[in-house]
Length: 151
Image (cartoon, rainbow, N blue to C red; front, side, top):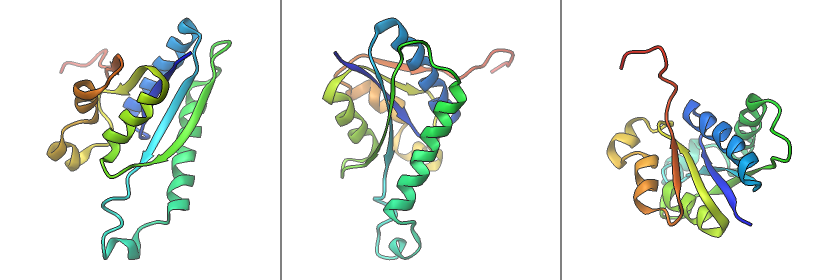
């Protein structure tokens, strides 16, 4: 049986993606893998390593983000299992590593439409866009909650 893989980054979009995946998991009867990917490529430069947090500190922070995201959902539907995973990005970055994680056993990959991209998102394109272009399994991009706003 496959899993539903959710890309997590601590953003509101990722939180919505996790909640959507948990509800979908109840319908499909498969577990959810909430995956937080640590990307140290820019922190481990010659000077960055002097001020960058250690891998264990980043892992603890990522685990805390996953714990808080799961707590925010509240009580999971009956039978829903969410596995929290912290993974270090390979040399092909966050998107490539997320796609590698999904290729292991995902029947569905879920991401939020907007995360913590910031300036890097402008330069590299959004994770959701890249995932849509390259995933080998179906992808769900959970939109923001824009009810009550004029955009």
